[in-house]
Image: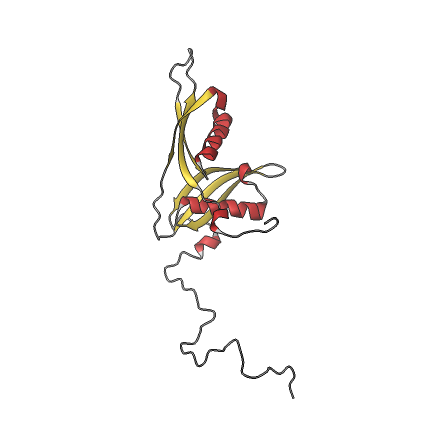
Length: 187
């Protein structure tokens, strides 16, 4: 269907952690070039390789046609039920300049925290995914957390109140259909 938005899990950004290893092609001048390994979060291995060459060109001046990828492996992340705090250092290109930023998120995995970060950057800053560079991601302890939206979730005695409590028995519960017609005026 054209023009409709389908909200399902396939549209959510699912990132995986890839470890990409590559090097410049051997030459007579340098027969054993150094191997560089990068940890990259991407949807699939094709995007991970592309991001590898993007960063490699910026950092070391090695283009894709002058280098080779040695290995691409998915680094599995153990998913537990414990929620962790993550700090993300990033850089993104706005319309006018390049901006450095630090953000904090709570999630079960690093990939989940990064997905939250990409969604927030798109919503709050209108930053596209291709203009965002993740510099560092770190699991934070309670002492390292700085942002108030994360600090408010840290106390051990935190409680979430029930806003609307449903009665336990069925006789007090209102039904959708009434036996009599409703009145629209009062005497």
